[in-house]
Length: 142
Ligand code: MC0
Image (cartoon, rainbow, N blue to C red; front, side, top):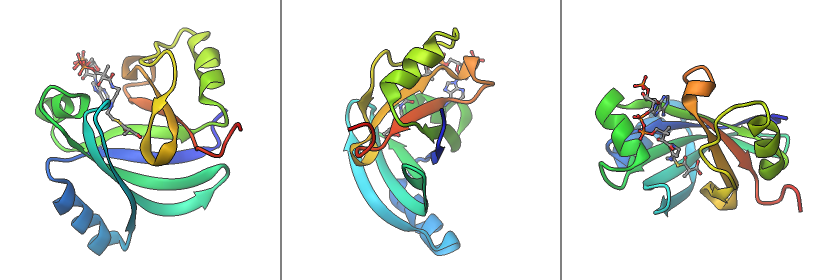
């Protein structure tokens, strides 16, 4: 079902400061930036490598406000790994399969994600404490 790790999402207070840190420390490059109002984030993708069905990235996330998923996470836990996202060939089909196994779906159907992807989240409490995201790259499943 999973083709690769698409990205690791990291919650931060200051996106620009964290981008500068990752660029100078690990020689990574920002390849996309977006404000995603629906998800309540301002985010940047830093490219690491290319794999089956798409690339892999570090995703830096700054909340648009305190009453958003990342805003609440920061208040409760501070900066750090917020979620892990796995590339799948077909996110709607993956949701059906995973939901059928009793895992709580935070999204019943795919939503808009970074770089034109389709995404959906699984409840962290059902996945060993890890907020899990499914990602279908825009050129998959067409
Ligand atoms: C909350 N919990 C987490 C967690 N967030 N555990 C691991 N990782 C996280 N990120 C835990 C809490 O500690 C709590 O455990 C329990 O889950 C319920 O949390 P809560 O604080 O009561 O509930 P909420 O209201 O904060 O909701 C948490 C939930 C929510 C995960 C359901 O954040 C959500 O629906 N997230 C999916 C959307 C999202 O995160 N969007 C932002 C990234 P205890 O033990 O205290 O009960 S958008 C994105 O990344 C896009 C742009 C993209 O990739 O393209």
